Length: 399
Image: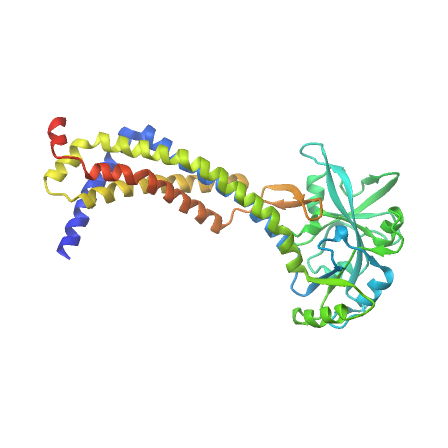
């Protein structure tokens, strides 16, 4: 116990010398801190893109909702269902029912081109034809402005995310697609899900506009409960009239997010790793400068009996402290600059734009701090060892 107290006393004394000498090394200390801050800021900023994209897709699903596609199709873009098949699906066991009938919407999915507000360049925007039950199937649907479109009319509802990111999508304006004009009657939200990136209209009207006959691409439905999924799936996959795949909405959208989030995370860690190398060298330079400025003090303390362990620990603590401050600065800047920032990106599963917001979460900030401390560790370990090995004779040469 006495030995530990003595060691802590030595550590406090040496650390005090280091902190008091920081003003003399403020330029190199600031360079090290801001180098670490840059790494953390970039890492958290890039990873917040993946977190936001994943959140948008995760928010699109509900455990008691399902999507039915043609067997062999993984996305709506390559799926196809006849009118007769969709009516069979809407009579399957386990499906929830409302006053107007089954809570199932047979839907059509097409891509249109619209200019982005930020760049003016055209981008793919999803346009979805729905049936009346669609508003009840999507439990998070909320009309934010205007009214719903009229059934049987060339009118559309616009998702709030699409309205923010693309030109000409305000209530009362007209959306021109080919030779047709579609009045915009309202704007809706969907709890932050991908539906907010879409434009909705009557499926029958969209079929006629795109010469799709009586075909659909998917059926979106709500179950009696999440536990009814297997009963619903078995009822469809064993029906000889059908050849379909059944997904929980949560599973369907989670699968769509894998490719994009993996790509973004890989790029984020690659860029951050390259920057971290530079930050480590900055930390090394700072700590070697610290040792050079304190050669006399450290060697004198060693001559008075201070242990090498206390010297190593004090230098490491200083390096970690500078890195921690840099990490906090980088995380704070990333949060203020990126959190909630609205943008769009391509969903490579559907080849259409998805509007989403960057998300700087607590786990991302914690991850950034861990990276900062790792940089501080490698930036301090070699100077710390050098400080511990300083010969007593070095103090005499400094006198």
